[in-house]
Amino acid sequence: MGAEMNHGLFAVIDTETTGLFPGAHDRIAEIAVLTMNRDGEILDRWETLVNPGRDLGKQSIHGIQARDVLTAPAFEQIVDELEWRLSGTVVVAHNLSFDARFLEAEFARAERSLPDFYLPRGLCTMKMSHQFLQGAGRSLQDCCDSFGISLHQAHSAAGDAEAAAVLLSRYLELEPTLPDWDVLLEQAASTHWRSNAPEVLLTPAKRSTGAGDPTEHFLERLVQRLPELTGSEQFDDYLAVLDQALIDRYLSAHEQAQLVELSKSLGIDRARAEQLHLNYFNSLVSAAWHDGVLTEAERSDLEQVAKLLGIDQAMLEQALRHPVDGDSANAVQGAGSVHNRLEPGSLIVLTGDMSRPRTEIETLLSHAGYKPHAAVTKKVSMLIAADPDSLSGKARKARDYGIPVVGEKYLWDNVLDR
Image (cartoon, rainbow, N blue to C red; front, side, top):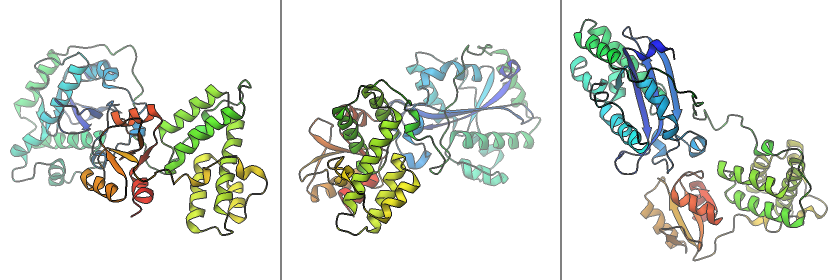
């Protein structure tokens, strides 16, 4: 963004948040700023996920996954750049009061503040619809529909900011000589408060574009060679963590990072980890073929585990054709029964916004013989999260205690088995 962009321009913003109440505990999880000139030309686009340091709230609305924000910057880390991008601009948003409240709260948490005049001087494309789109609905979608504007990636900060920017440009076209436009831009140009960019601009964190996108397998993060520090006890430690991580047949970003760090601390290099994974996989193959029959459910399970462990296709196909020979089937005790971890009366804690009301799920758990629990203690057997990479306090405490953290799918498929 060039220096000239700090003078007399529109900054169209949008935020995605964990909830509706910035004064309580909700936070910004994504923000976008589009800089636009008087002619409706977009000069710069900037967006980033923000690690809110808490659960992401209703993920079904904003679509942000916890694994995407794990390495995203905290608001305190972007506040300098954000202030620079807003300086000398007229802030614009659809329902500006909502975004303004969150900005004020986040700046306050960072022990910073925007100038008193800045947010009150902004433009709200929702309120302006009463002037330019009489009779239309107030939502961003309604206003965009009135002009035939395509709203791509709704409920993403970049998508909604882009739509609001186009909407503002249409307002400018309808009333190009309205004095208010130039008055506001002149005020902005004369009151820019930060001309110089921060010395370091952080790399923005973006959403993952889809579940099918190729991603680096966590084994790639293990070094090729480490000093020989390992023995059977170290192997058991690694396999025990792996066994727990795979209980729901999903390796969260937290679990992958834990395995990488554990491998380093135990002196397990990539080749050794690959062998341990193969031994683990062969234990599952042996268990699946124990009765001489490989069911579709067992086949699907082996395929899923092979993908998670980085087992190559040839090894998987061999396993699906016939049982594993030799002693490898005994390499990992209990690996064939990873889905049978909960005893009657086990304490189970829930976290996050799930597909059914929490009270309903707790009732189902009670009827199934388990004990729903409100807090994470060392006596809890499992934490079930709406997102397995949840950043909630409960999830952090469960990981500290070594309690399995699994997703909602595991609840329905293996705990309640609906």
